[in-house]
Length: 462
Image 1: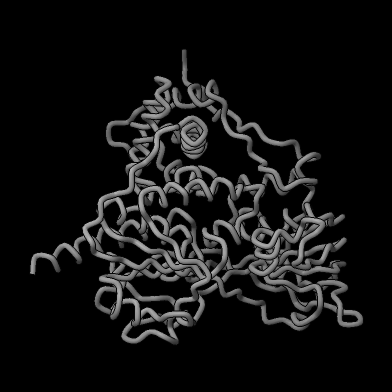
Image 2 (image 1 turned 180 degrees about the vertical axis):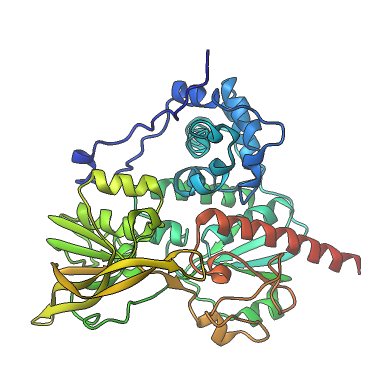
């Protein structure tokens, strides 16, 4: 029997149903589908897919166990490298990472590595009954600032190595961008809670409602209580387009809009946090956050939702799966359009003026540069405009910490191991790179944890 040329399809909620609820869209592989997909793997000896994984999961080995129906063994292989497999299986851009390196992809569609990782993690979470004993501590204490993906990954590595780890989280809910930034229909918060509970079981401690830089500073942590500090505060400061009308009622940053929905449950009828239920919503931007905002607006009851993006569909940076889901749900794309002005009436949004663009030569990042066409303006009717053009790190750590170097963009400067210019302080994730992916943040957290372990081990030997 030959190899199936295409991935086995992921079961999903139908578009006509899912636009009316916040339940997860992708329903996950059955055991039969998972085994069938695993059998597409060539089990390459040089394992190129592993090189495409920021946390270096032994991908062919866990897939080989799926083929044999050894799902718990497959999970144990993944867990050796990743602290958050159920999350990564859902939100990581596998198509540009591990799956892009898959040998099978040279001729056919690559193996659905992300779908298989999700299946294994979900199987473990629903079938595992074993209790985890807390790790034995070596009495060295590490503070982790931020409970997002980089902080959780760093803490997971360190606690398993014997360190007494405390995570400080500014919000009342743990998970960072995993809970405030990614909608329930893409990443159920119960999944995040289970992954965090597993870290608690290993012995990681959590301090909520602690704003490092206000409640306590990095300097105070390193001077008084902790032997090392990891900063994983993310990039939660929204960027705006700098166009007229951004102060009108009905204009949101995607960060605020999604936080109100995901963290404060503003979509519930008795929610204490208000949110505009617009009839016509326009989202500016073309990344995953823009897709999340647009699809969320639709679920709030918008009759029309449009995404405005300056380049063409080929340059759209969002995951292809998310774009396809958005199209299926009836979201329209106003491509090759640049926002010019948010138009208002009585201090409320009434439309977005845009200007048509054409693509020119590549910019410094290799992307075709959009060139605005004169006298090509038109107005898109809207009573809500959501700006999703990126975020940057919050400046609080920069303002309150001595001896740490920052870039012009406000990102923490680190070496290849995550070490900052301040002794004993490490950093990773979006606080270092600017807004990026969950798995890259996890990889940075894991790298820094290994560096912290080496640093503290060397201290013991002095």
